[in-house]
Amino acid sequence: MSVRSIEAMKSLSILPILILALPLITSCSGGSTENKFVNDAEPATPSSVQEAAPWQELEAATPPWPNDSDLAEVQVSEPSNTLRFMVDTKHLSIGKDQIVRYTLVVKSPSGAENVSFEGIRCTLNGAFKVYAYGSGNSFKPAPEADWRPVGKSGPESYRDDLWRHHFCVRRSTTPRPLKEVIRSLKTGVAGRDDTQLMAD
Image (cartoon, rainbow, N blue to C red; front, top):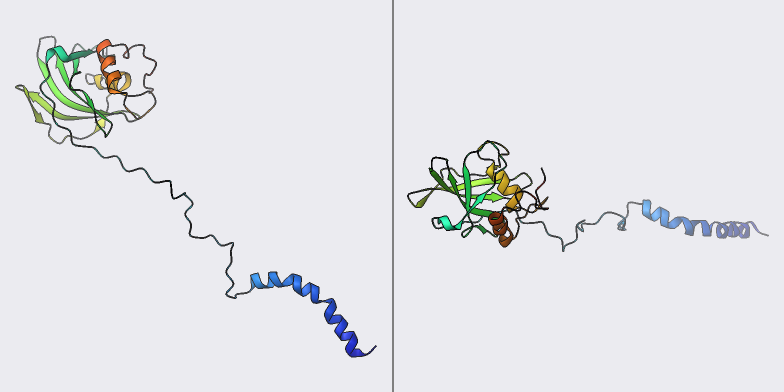
């Protein structure tokens, strides 16, 4: 057998090895072949999932002056409080912004009255805002009205009772249906033994 024939046979014997190694050589080369394993620009979140719009407070008109016949007294849990707190159930409202707005009448043992138009948000710890104060059968906007945490004790803890027992769904950030809120205020049931009490 000639030397040329032997060299040809050697070339044919290494051909399968070169064929198997070709993909590895191609992937490691710096050529123009695109690497299909590189992360593409497709977002990780499906396009059908959209971020929730930020919460925005809506404008609310001041309600009419309350009538005594529409007032429901709130049974407060602060034992040392000698004031009486009443909510106008006729003009109580729940806005599309999820704010419970109500007129509050506070009566002292001497008969003096304070009237205010307020709002409560059903956040996890409760937040309130005083929109206007009443005087002479009319409301005047409160100066620098802003949202503040609901007080848990003291003379203004009635807001905690409203937030916890009457206005908001237990362990949620949504208000109860309006009819249920009004029923709760009128009967006083939710203030003591309702199963939907808010948690601390």
